[in-house]
Image (cartoon, rainbow, N blue to C red; front, side):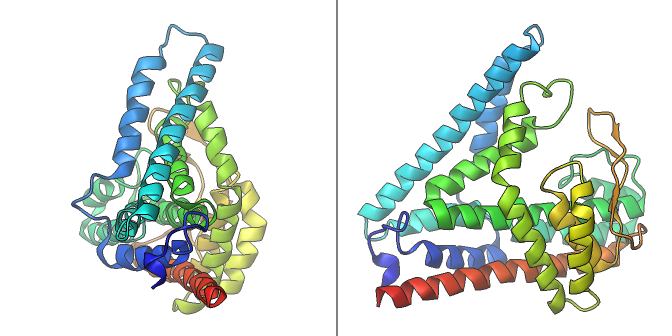
Length: 332
């Protein structure tokens, strides 16, 4: 069988099959609880370097250079670890199981869907429970958010997570194997930890933020297109409106990438997302609105966004299956 073959595209002809199986298992079970999560290790190393190198007494230039060095170290170490696992997977008959487990852990489908369900249920119970639920998936201050703001924040996070938690990891794995997937997750983890414009991280996290912008240029746009296509499968969602809103409003986002999936989600669901907000430790951001629908998002909209997210994830699995079938037929 193909899964037992020695890898050689790029770490093995089995890559698309492993991805397909990983997408399916992650959708059903989520992260394997018995495996120390690689992102926690990446985050731990990032935090250690942040505390050791990001000193207030240093000038901005020095902190930029040290931050770039931290990125090289964390991303390089992650890629090297991915390469080592891939090499062992190629050498051992059942070695692909280790690679498979890591790919499952580095995808983020079920975890996000579960968080969205919790936010919707919390909104049904009241604003304060919803604030506690949504704080696990957003970086902004939640204490001033009303119910509509909580719902919008959850939907925006869901759309962005589809890009950097599903589409980008899948694409990096298909193109560059496990080393590429591990490197991407390290970049994304560092951006989420030190890539924001707080006083502490404006200089030290600059390299992490710029690199994250670069590696997500293509995946974010693919994610927007897939969300628009997935809207066909979700009752009440509009694929054409998603496409038009994405093309019109995505460039309004302060990020060069996040606007594509978020604008597609806003258009598909008939909502207005983004708008003015405040992040932890940062000044208020007077961001533009994406979409021309309702800003008064509700728990029902959170549930619709969850279904749209699931449908868009299914499209990634369909694409992986098509690639796997093509590779199998090519080998035959």
